[in-house]
Amino acid sequence: MQENKLTEAQSLELITSMINDSRTRLARNSGTPFLIWGYTTVIVSLLVYFMTSYKLQNAAPHEWYVPAWLWLAIPIVGWIGMLIFGKHKQQGAQNLIDRVISIIWTVLGISFLWIMVVGVFYHTPILFLTIIMCGIGTTMTGYIIRNKATKICGIVAMVSSILFPISRWLMVRFIELHDNITRAEWINCETLLFAAIFLFMMVIPGHILNHKYNNK
Amino acid sequence: MNNTNSAEQKLNLITEMINDSRTRLARNSGTPFLIWGYTIVAMYVASVIAIFITKGEPTGVLLHGIFPLCAPIIALIIMKFRKKEDKATQSNSPAIKSLWLIVGIACCLIMLVSANHFIITLLISIGAIATGLIMKQKEFKVCGIIGMVMSVMIPFIQFYVQPRLITLSEYTVPADRGFISISDFGIFITLCYTIVILIVGTTLIIPGHMLNKKCNN
Image 1: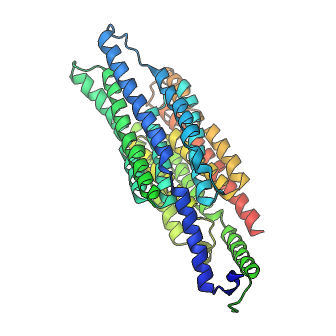
Image 2: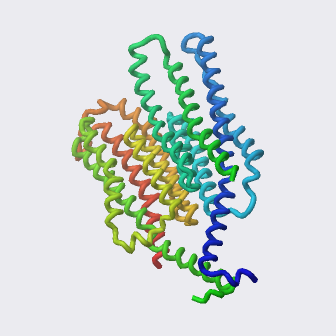
Image 3: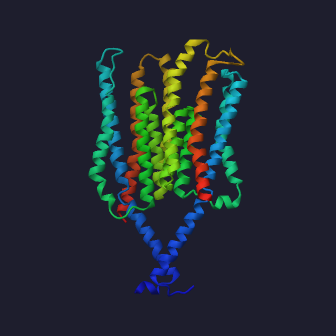
């Protein structure tokens, strides 16, 4: 057999190239889940924003209505999208990189369900928490697949999540002084901010990842 | 070394090296979790003491709020000055290292912005569960899930117990309660910090000790 004549250097080179091949294979299409969840969240957020704006303009004072049920479209559409477009990623054996990424997103997903359950009974800042959770997942994915753009987008998103508490702080002070905006309108604008952060955090790295690795 | 090793011998060598590295990495792998766990607990205990000294008056908020912020700085200093052999044998693979780095940054960010202890304890629990799954250690998985369930006690206190405390008396004015004098606000903060201590003990200290015992034996 030819392998029997390999020197240590050649063997190591072979092992290294196999590891690199495996890393590239795993990174191929790794942007697709980011795009599925990113686009779904951005589109749903915009729908929520426009529907709420319409309701606010056409409802009597203090009778505003938030289409909260629309948020449920994110997990439903996201999972359908993952079932349809995420299948081709499961080719070949699962290695540590793939396993760690799956673990991180699974744990974050389960915790998010927990936050939603808690949020039903207590007032938890859902938008702020969602950005923090997804920011952690994006940054971790960037670290594991060693992609700088994903890392940076995740970190920037995590830091930008502080805009939500700042917005609430400003809201209390601003509404006291001005009558031209209501509390509901202000909170509705936060949905736009949420969509913008999600676009930067998931859609942009998703396209970068797919472009980078699918061309290899 | 003989250059004409058979493929089987090479594979055996690689397997042996991987197994050796796995055993070496696993030794003392609970120590970083213990350092972080004990430092956070010590800082929160100091905060509780500060609350009792200031009788739970809001003017003492800065004093007892500063201790939790010091925890990451102290833990990082201790981690830096650990023995060399401990550093070399810690279990932190790049994945676990980056996981805790990001969780730590997120916790510091939340602490600075809103001091929301529900999110902080939830993030620590998430870190413990993910660590357990990556390292395939049952202790971390179980303790992390317990921590996650326990974290709900903080919003419970905030939204159920606290409003009832407000109706009892002047919220921020210290009142005599047996052998101590403390305000309702002080009681609320003490309850929150006690839960944080319990969760950190469950998610970091207990599995850290169990892991060290298991690996060092």
